[in-house]
Structures are given as structure tokens and as C-alpha cells.
Image (cartoon, rainbow, N blue to C red; front, side, top):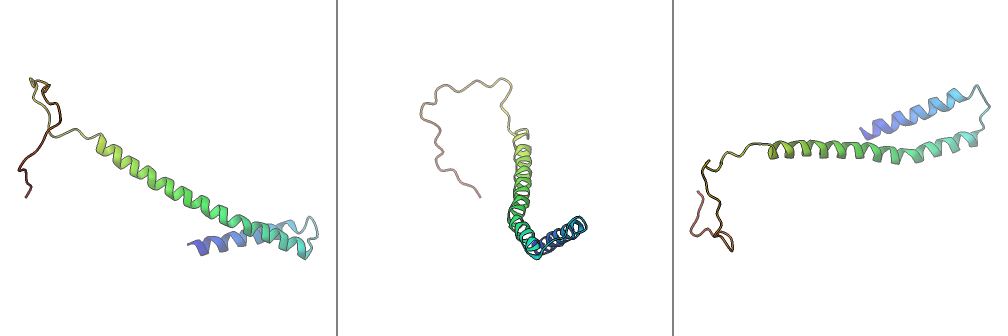
Length: 99
């Protein structure tokens, strides 16, 4: 796709340059200066398109993360549950396994 975009960009530059010809007589060195200047713009334009793709990926990831954060927990405390106040150093699980 990048080759196609580059060729399309170069074609657009040439069409723009040819469209300017009726207004003034272009000398060959002006054409090459113009072409060189436009070719120098290709790299920043490509990097801008990459920024958009990265930004879209980040936004999609943020949507997925917020969807997970917004889910209601499946395990809830009992309505009359008392707060635990005697834990000082954390909770230790001993001989706990998973299948």
C-alpha cells in the first residue's frame, strides 16, 4: 500500500506542476527543485499516517479496557457483612491449589 500511496502522491505533484505551466514558463531546474521539495515531504506525510493508525489502536484498546472496568463484579458482599478490622499484615493462603 505504501508504494501505491507514493506513486499517487508523485502523480499528484506532477499534475499540480503541469497545471501551473500555463501561468508561467517553467525551466527544467525549477521542475527538479519542485520535485525534490515534494519528495522531501513524502516521509513526514507517511509518518503522519502511521500516527493515525497508532492512535486508533490505542483508542480501541482504551474502549476494551473501560468495558472491562465497567463490568459489575460477580461476587458481592452480603448485605449485613461486617468490615474486617483485625488483619494487620495481610492475608496468607496456605495449601491452596487450582485444577
